[in-house]
Image (cartoon, rainbow, N blue to C red):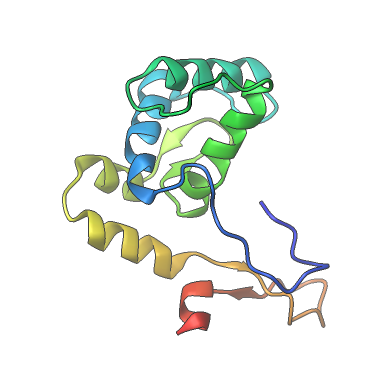
Amino acid sequence: MANLSKSKALLGFTSPRTIEKIIPEIRILTDNFRGAIRSGNQDVQKSFFQTLYESEYYEGETFPTDPALAARDRITRAPKAFGFVDLNPKISLTKAGELLLSEKRLDETFTRQLLKFQLPSPYHTQSRKVKFGVKPYLELI
């Protein structure tokens, strides 16, 4: 996840570029790698990206030079941040992820998870013991 300690800017997710593309990628991840240890496991990360690359959902034209990095980007950014997958200690689907994959009320599911999403607050640095979080969506409103 991004480190905001030296910046007051908020991050955005770039992989996948549209939120609807998260659904087939999460399905590929959980159907093929549920129960696998992801953290630090380059083989699982490379295998996930290879499976995604060979699927009908991948729209890129070239295979990345570092497929493990590309896989981490797709697994740990939006799917993990929005609470659709749990990666520790093993890859698993959350209740929100199950709702997402059911493809019922997609707008409601995305909105609910978007409203819950938090980042470390760059403005609350008084305490090293208490971590303050901000909800970017609500802050912008």
